[in-house]
Image (cartoon, rainbow, N blue to C red; front, side, top):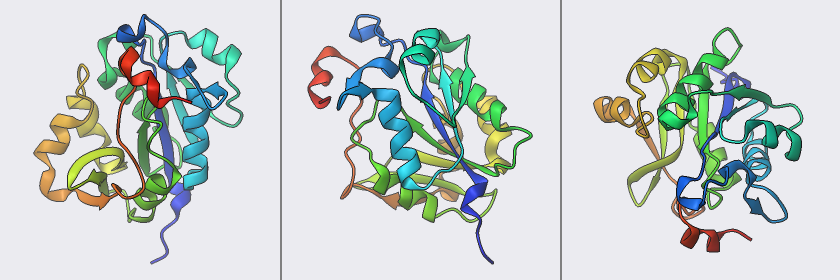
Amino acid sequence: MTVNKDQVAGLLLAAGGGRRLGGRPKALLSHRGRPLVEHAVAVLRAGGCTRIHVVLGAGADAVREQAALPGCVLVDNPRWEEGMGSSLRAGLDSLAGTVARAALVSLVDQPGIGSEAVGRILAAYQDEKSLISAAYEAVRGHPVLFGAAHWAGIAATATGDRGARAYLKEHAEAITLVECGDVARPYDIDTTEDLVHLE
């Protein structure tokens, strides 16, 4: 069976308000001369995602004005302050009714994860029952891929900043782990000390 990778939509969670960064929206932090959200979208594209949905929250209007995101579906999450779970739900909702049969989820504040990791996760996709996670020395991390068969269960349990953690823990035996530690570094940009990772 030929697997159609076009069935996998890139889903970028970029709604964070950067509370520990003085309230600067993470999407607009500068990295390599452009907003972090542009970098993250470019990584998804280079990794093989042709359809990309970007969930915006903090500073959404400013992101629309300052970031060049052609071809992306921009999704507003008015409840972004509730945490990543609300953004994940908004993103999955935005894929309902599209041709997407899976969502490859990445986070805007992880610039150390590049296109090679995205490509590995995409290559492991089989069908809408797929549940795939990058691993770093066998520890689960991002990006993750959720087949459409899992969307309702994830949306029902995605609360606060936990995202899909509870669902993945409950379905651990079904997850395909793809080691990415040799091509990516899974640090987060959460505090001012972390800004050293940005160029």
